[in-house]
Length: 295
Image (cartoon, rainbow, N blue to C red; front, side, top):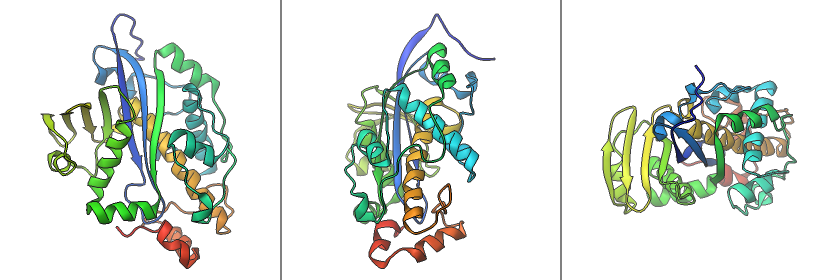
């Protein structure tokens, strides 16, 4: 049954998720979405199963499914969520500046700007209306993008992919002031203490289990790392969709720059995709270290 709650508390919650944690090619994107929700507690108020969206809203991997139609749907959702926080992006470069506050020189990576929309999607007014009537109030969208050369640099410094991912999560979290954060689990990790200690953070354990680990981080708030959180909790789902959309825009620009003129990115960038290796082979030698990861 759809949940509309009229007599309970409101909570400020931020969801954070990453896209591109383990590929061979392309950027790591970590995106955060803060929301005002209502319910008996912030976790149940954010449960995806309590809402029936007018268009498919689910884990980004289930939306962007390597077809033109699915990419159009994903683009529509992402643009609608940005519209809900009064962010209008007309190009990839503008997306990077407004959402990630990044001045990445696209030409240094051998790619050009893309005019948005790219995949045929557009703002969906039914979804905007549903957000209003359901009491889901989006507040802010902010993110971080690490192109492969920057990713390689930080991996060399930190020595651990999970630690780098967590540091990006916390950097994005620091841009919000909600005090309650829902995050996707990082590589199936259960115990995060060693990572917090490596980053010099003081913390207390709330709970630790395979499905849900939670901590109080000093001067930051509660952090809940949830297995498959992007398919369970709305703020993480929204963050994952916007982050996935940004990564796919970058991959599409790369595809086009190398002469692969498909309507969606030619390759996913992941090891299991044979097209990824064709992209790697097509990269000029001076660009390989900007796109290909060392770990």
